[in-house]
Length: 200
Length: 297
Image (cartoon, rainbow over all chains, first blue to last red; front, side, top):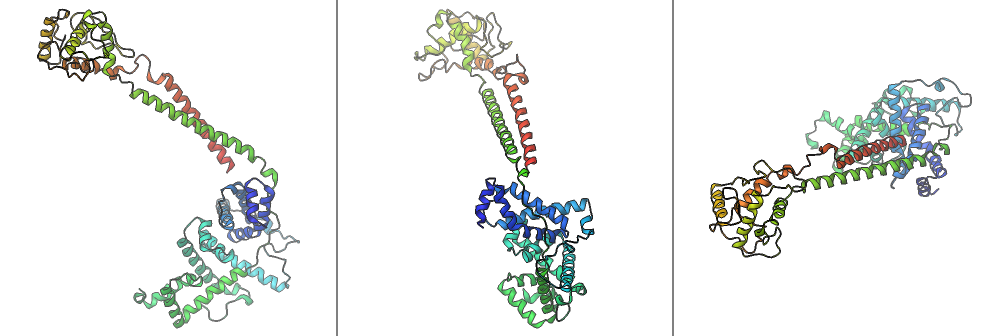
C-alpha cells in the first residue's frame, strides 16, 4: 500500500482512500486506546473519534511520520475520554455480559492455544492493565507509545506535543513505577512469566 | 561529579538512570560509571533485571482484539463541502469588512488632520475685498510676479488695511464666524499685537491716502519706512509684515477649532455612520465565522 498516495487522495476528500488508511492503523490505534483507557467501550469510542478527527484535519498533515501524527490525534481522543470518565463515571454493561461468541474480549483469539495458556494470558493482561492504571495519564501514554507502539523519543514528543527531555523523564518514572508494581504483585503474574532469580 | 555522590545515594542515582541505560541514552561518562557500579552491586543488577522483565511482559501482553471496523461512512462526510463553503464565505466577508473599516477610518482620520487650514484661506476674503479697492489691484492674493520688495509689503499691508477694517470679514468655507476681536464694521479690526505695531499702523494709515483707519491702531502694519524690507525672493503674500502676520495669526489661531463642522454633530456624520455600519458588519461575520469554525471542528 502506498500510504502517501492514500493520504494525498484523502486530503482531496477521497473517503475510500482514507478508509484504506483506517484499516492499516485501526489495530494499533485501538490497542493504544485500550491500554490507555483500560476498557473496550471507551477504547472503541476513542478510536472512532480519532479517525473522524483525523479525516477532518487530514489537510493539516504536512509530511513526516504519519503514525506519530495519527497517534497525536489518538492521544487527544484518549484524554477526552478520560475527562468524560472523570466527570461521569460509568460502568460498562457490555463488560458485565458474557458474549458467548467472544467470552474474553480484548484477547486475540487468532493464535491457537490451550485453555491454560489462554487463562494465563488473560491473567497477565489483567495484571498489566492494573499496573498501567496506577500511572498518571501522561506517563501511561508515554510508556505505551515507546514500549508497545515502538515510537522514538522524537515521535513521542511530537505526538504528545512536548519535548524530548520531558519524554525521557516521564518514561523513566513510568518504567520504575510499573516495575515496582509488578514486583510487588508478582504472585498475580502467571508462573511462566514471573521474574527468575533474586527478588527486589 | 560522581565522586561526590554518597554511597546511599548512588543506588538511587543508578536506579533513576536505568531507563536511559536500557535505551542507550546515557552519556559515555555516566554509562561507564553506572556499569562499574552494576558490576559491584547485586541489588542494582536485580533492579535492572526487574525493569527489563517488566518491559518484556508489557510487550508480551495479549493484544486486545476489536470486533468493529472504524472505517468512515460517506454520509458522515457529506455535509463537509457545504460547511466549507459557508465557512469560507464568512471568513472572506469578515476580512473584507475589516479592511473596509480600516480604510474608511484611515481616510477619515487623514482628512481630519489635514483639514486644519493654513493662513491662506483667511487671506481669501481679504483678497476678495481687495478687488474692490483700487490700490489693491496691484497686489493680488496669489501674485505670479514679485513686485519690488520695498513697496510690495507696504502695498499689501495697505491694501489689507481697508480689507480688515472696511469690509466685513467673510469666513472661508468651513470656517466659523470670526472672533469678536474682529468687528465687522468700522475701523476696528484686530487689536495690535504690540504697541509698536499700533504705532506703525497709525503712521502707515496716515501716509496712505486709501487707508481709512487713521484711528485704527490695528490697521496697516507695514506702511512705515521703519519696517525692514521684505526679501525679494519671497512673494509678498507669502511673507506678510510681522504685524500682519500677528493679525493673521490672531485670526488664524481659532482656525483649528473652526475647522470642525460645528453645525453637524461628529457622531452622526455620514462617514461616521459608514464606520459604525462596517464595524457591525465585521463583528457579525466574525461571529459567524467563529461559530462555523467550531461546528467544523
